[in-house]
Length: 484
Image 1: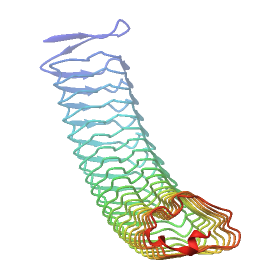
Image 2: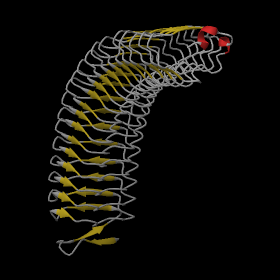
Image 3: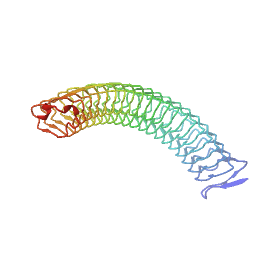
C-alpha cells in the first residue's frame, strides 16, 4: 500500500490500494500530484473535482483507464501526458477544455468520445497517440488546436463536427492511416500543415463554406487521388498539395483567383488541368514537376504565369493560352520535352521560358508580344519555324541558341538590335531577313550557323560586330556579305 500526499494546500492524503484511486474530496487536483506513479492503474475522478492541473498524472506508465466525474470542467496541459498504458477515457458531462499536451504520447489510447460539453481541444492534446483509431467529435466542439492529433498513426477516419470553424496548424499531420475526412459546413479555415503527411488519405472535398486552405495543408498526402475545391476558396496557398504523387484530378471552384508557389508541385500523376474561370495568377512552380501532365486549359482571366510554373512537365504536349495572358515568367515551360506547339498572345516572355523543349516545332507570336527573354528557346532542337509579331522590340541574349532545326527567320519591323548569341548554333539556319529598323548585330549573334547562306539587311544598319557571323562557314566567298 502506497500513500500519496498532495501539496500543502491540499485537504487530505489519498491512499493507493491495489493500483486503484478514487479522487473525490478536493475541488482540484494540483500539478504533479501523481506524476510518475508506477503502480496507479485506474482513476475515478469524483464529483467534487472541477479542475485537473498541469502534469497531475504525467508519466503514470501503468495507468489504463480514467473516468471523469460530472463536474470536471478543465483538464490542464500535460495532465496525462506519457501515460503509455492508458487505453480509454470517458469524459464527464461538463468538461469544456482539454489543455495542450493533455494526453500527448498516450500510446495505448484507442478511442476517445467527447461529451457535448467539450468546446476546445488545445494544441498537442492527443498528439502521438499512435493506437488511436477513431474520434467522434461532439457537435459543440468549436476549436481543434495546433497538432491536436498529429502523429496519431492509427487514426483511420475523422468527421469534423458542425460547430468547428478552424482546424489548427498540423492538427492531423502525419496521421498515416487516415483515409477519409468529412468536413462539416461550419468549417471555414484549414490551417497550415493540417493534414500534411497523411499518406493514406485518398480524397478531399473542400466544402462550400471553407474560405482558407493554409500552406502545406495536404503536402505529401501520397495516396490522395482527387481534390474538389469549394466555391469560396480564393487562393490555393503555397505547397498546399505539393508532392501528392497519386493526385489524378483537381476541380477548381469559381472563387479561385490565385494558385500560389508550388501549390501542386511534383504531383506526378496529375494528367490534365482546367484552370478555373476566375484564376488571374499562377505563381512560381505551381505545377512544377507534374511529369504526367499532358494538357492544360487556361481560363479566360489568367494574366500572369509565374516563373517555372510548369517546368519539368515532361508529358505536356500542347498549350493554348487565352488572350488575357500578358506575362509568361522565367522558365515557365522549361524542360517540357514533349511540348510540340504553343499558341499565345502575351506581351512579355521571360528568360528560359521554353528552354530545352526539344519537341517544340513551331511558334507563332501574336502582335502583342514586345519582349522575348534571354535563352527563351535555348536548345529547342526541333524548332523549325518562328513567326515574329510586328510589336517585338527586344530579343534577349541566346534566345534561340542551339535551335538546330531552325531554317529561316524573318524579323519584325520594331527590332533594332540582335543581342549576343541570339541565334548562335542554329546549324540549319539558311536565311535571315531583317526588319527595316535593325541597327546593331552583336557579337556571336549568328555564331556557328553553318548553313547560313542568305542575309538581307535593312537600310538603317549601323554596327555589325566582327564576330557576329563567326564560323558561318557557308559565307566563305560570299561577296555580298563582304560589302556590308
